[in-house]
Image (cartoon, rainbow, N blue to C red; front, side, top):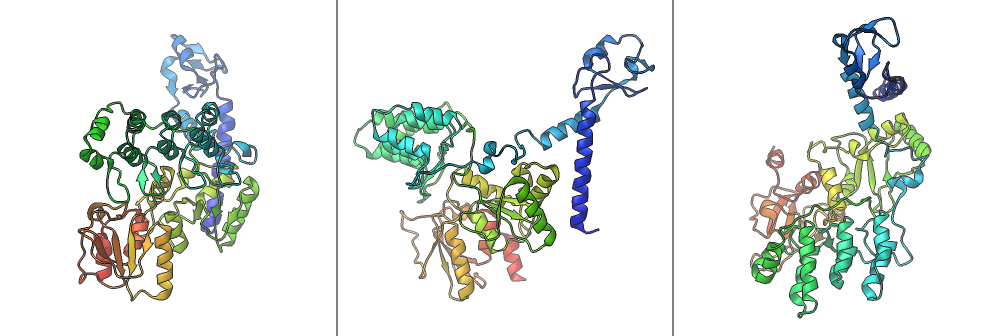
Length: 488
């Protein structure tokens, strides 16, 4: 039996077993009062169940209420296995994961923000109307947010409602959005956070609505705005506050910190597009069955609009499309998601089938990091940084790496960069860690980099570093394992 056929047989057996258990559990009720509960005590003599309430009433031996056997407290045992099986089935198949074919209108997978001809959602349009018309009230906005509209939906020029409210100095709209789950640490055009913008507006405006702008800063901090988040120049709100005593006083007075509330839905503001490709006839048939069962279509070509990327298994070898998908912050799912969904005839939770790492970087959680980076509206992995590909990089590879760098938000330089260690206002990698926090440029070589001297601003790395950066979703010095492999 092939491994794939065996998998299907295992899933079929598991499905049958669970269906049998569900039928069995429907019949499980207290022999005395007929109450249904997962907490059952069974008579070791006959196996008939009793609830905990009836157990307390059996103080002397009595005849079983179903058969002639005697029942006494000493012969009753707690059915822990029955409870565990109930819990497993309940957690494995939660009610929210209903069959899409029966409830397409309620499923996130078909739910996305409709845009008008200008590229704005209903929420974006309403926020724009309020901020540009002092006579407008917030009733419609409040209703939209209560009904579960995503408060983080970007408008046609890629600004979140929160950034628009900060720019307009509208405290009421800002607090409505924050209370509905708007991300206080989202970035404007991948350059600065909401708190950076609020502080900048407070500092630069000439005493205009200072009190309101101060309250905006307080609200952002109250809802968890990160004081250590760097802007594209590597400056944090904390560092700005140290140079402006008034800002420092405002921030330090915010002793009430509230967790960011989870909005009713946190979905990408674009229609889900699934990528899946396989030359294997069995997997092709499985994908076809899934598509027919749930009315979800798969693309066999990766595109910039792809939101979900199906892979064969965990710890796989990522090809070029997979690297681009990680940088595009797609959600990755293994083929097991397709298998389980088809086997149980209902869509399974995506997070349960997310790969944990790649072949070379197992357990790196790069896929989860990338996905969460998108959901929390953080910049792409290489944002703020520049790259120079050294001359020995072949033309074909050069084009491939240039596309990878640009997809990750980085800039490709056409000439050798000059040292800029003394330049204070220079863009840096927003995701830079350790010695790369001040780094602005990475020079990639196809040979050993020992003869090149790195500085705080300019680093010289082997070109294989870019694969490691993507597969760990981090911007830091090459790992010791990578350097040792290059020396072999």
